[in-house]
Length: 138
Length: 138
DNA sequence: TTCAAGATTGTAATGATTACAATATAAAAT
DNA sequence: ATTTTATATTGTAATCATTACAATCTTGAA
Ligand SMILES: [Mn+2]
Ligand SMILES: [Mn+2]
Ligand SMILES: [Zn+2]
Ligand SMILES: [Zn+2]
Image 1 (cartoon, protein in one colour):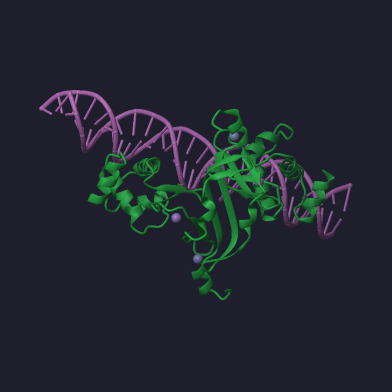
Image 2: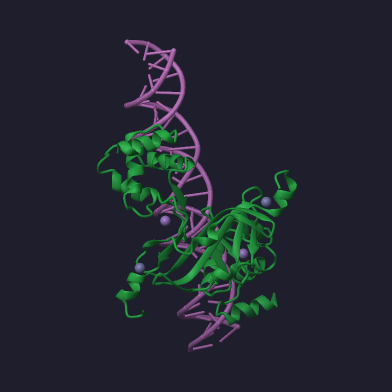
């Protein structure tokens, strides 16, 4: 927690309990939560937490490059801490979102057909390893 | 228009004036409109057109594989006729969405890390050719 | 012609997100 | 330490794309 305090300070984001807890939540294994998932998870320990604060905080953390946001095939924005460029794969069966750090080679910036590319996003859909094993259609 | 009539018939979609006009709109150069853009464009010639009908029709056309839908970095769904697999590039400056048929090689289905991939989507962002030429930062 | 299935329409509801104003908290100045 | 000022948090209301629903209109058999 002292660690997160320093991280926020260094990024010029005045640390507050709310900001620390939200950033902590994103750094501790919670894969790709939406704003609402973060709110639901934290309001137990922080009864006065407001959903507006979750949205405000997430926007600030994104603006200061402490976290990143993305969108897959649905209409909600998801957030994550992972700083390494990677691909996202969503299982149609169980809904899990997997990080694919392998094969992320085509994520570099560059020029295509005269256009300057500054940001790439690759989303995959299908049936995940676990669901394939569970059902008979491997 | 007779042509579109037959296309809908063959796809088991009972043809109606609304469905014909919407499918026609997507086949005549209109690049990647949202439901509302289609509604605004057609309500002149079809004064009684309802936005619900636009949504219903788009859903049916997608379900019957006559058009496809996708989503980039915003929260609205866009529709298109182009049946060839391709990549989308959106210009941050002018908002135009370009089709990149070149380099769409990584769009085939297959297996990755034991997951079965059935659908891939690649979205790029940056500054387009035209905007680069217009400003001095080429 | 009759009638039932399906299509279209208008309005109301939903769900994620943002705008806004009031309150609370923390930092700076006296 | 007290006052002042700036910023953070909160609750509520508004927005925007989309969906649900029920009523009306069309259409294509029987
Ligand atoms: Mn990830
Ligand atoms: Mn396209
Ligand atoms: Zn799965
Ligand atoms: Zn441009």
